[in-house]
Amino acid sequence: MTIAVILEQVPDVVEELAIAPSGNELDRDTVTYVLNEYDDHALEEALLLAEASGDEVIAVGIDTTGELDQALYTALAKGAKRAIKLVGDFEETWLSTRATAEILAPILRDLAPRLVLTGVQAPDDLDGQLAPTLAARLGWPHASVVIGTEFSDGRLRARKELWGGMTLLLELEPPAILGIQAARQAPRYVPVSRVRQVMREATIEEIEVELPTQPSVAVERLRLPEEASQAELLTGSAAEIAERMIELLRARGLL
Image (cartoon, rainbow, N blue to C red; front, side, top):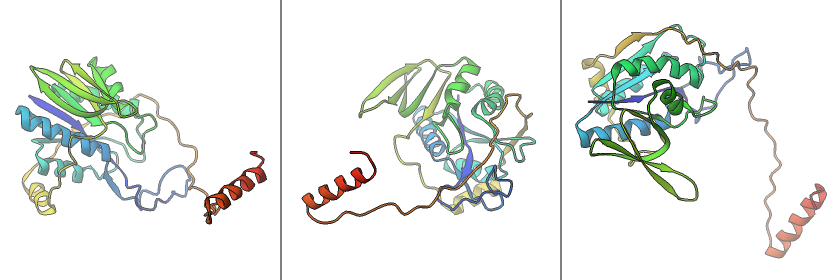
């Protein structure tokens, strides 16, 4: 049996981002793409499950950036058995959660995995709803913000993070879909030499897909955060700091 994990390349938010002259998207020529952090955790959780159950992991992604191969080869180097790249006319196209689910749902239905794992959210989505949207399309049970999983007597146990340090243990009947918040351990490291070896030996499967019919949100304008120097470091005794805080609050009409 198989476990499918959805991977997406996203702009590296650690790097300085530049806005294109159009003003409504990033300058793609300067963007560095990396694997979505939550998808990396989804991959790790899928591999942990597969190691315990004997399932095979299939990495699946939509190549909207032209940069997906690196993530798929890395997934193969870590232990995935297959890698599938969905290709189409995605140039300068931003896919909403609903559009992404529309593309992925028939592919996943054909693959018939007993479990689908995806990151709980991504820096470039607006709602973090890929897992429940996929589940709605496929008619499968789902859970999101998951921080641990295990198979038990043919059923899936998923630990969902709530609030205030509380968690909820759920039982789901496969096939199911999970939005992973964090794997049970940090994503494993794989040497660059191993990834290069896989690139020489393995093949990424390609499937042509159509542009989705679901409408996407149109981005009207992007802008960088405005820079301002309004912070003031308060020093002195506790009484002096408290007095200065009161002065500042009064000056702003807050007291």
